[in-house]
Length: 275
Image (cartoon, rainbow, N blue to C red; front, side, top):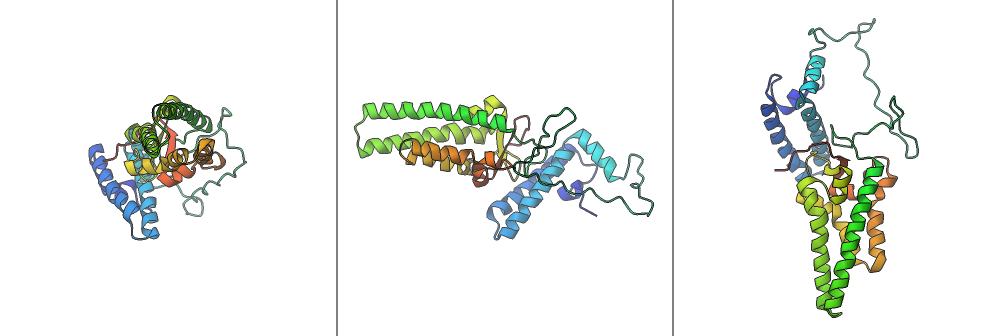
């Protein structure tokens, strides 16, 4: 028999929500250390899998409606009877796992003909941000920071001579500005200006919480370095290609998300702030 959500969190089935939250955060902190500092890939991967199960348990038990439904299923029915069995006296077989959709295969649709929403990998209870919103957010961020980049570059060129000192000043200023625009708001709220306007956000792939400074920095470091370090439009093109790699991947987990170990989800999902 598989481990119940209560057993996974180490609480009794009649525990209060505060007790469950406390146990969840304590266990999550322990797993975070294993994910980031595990001595082997096997230990780290095991911790990530257990973190996903822990997040799933918390999402269910934190919601009174889902918890009541889960408790009913756990007892085998609303009247406490065991689950129904087939004529041979065996429990019905569990449904087969969902087949992974091919890259160019159309997504399944609901009763109204709309594409089914998908759950982002490793973040139970959230909803992956759709393609259109992510592209719109990217466009807003690129246009905003493109204007800032041109403005800062023109200003420094006009007031400073073409010297090593001026170049160092320009690089430093751009690095600080880009981090202030992308990294800081991602840690604070999971949203840059573009993501805020399109109602999507970035979360930690392991915990479902807002990204830490380390993960937010890893997520954006390559595009920032490409824009600042490569000459002319070459850096912008390199950063753009790196940033939109998720478009070609069915799971929508691109290079930035892989490097920072993050996911982009609909903003109505409310993660816990990292402690």
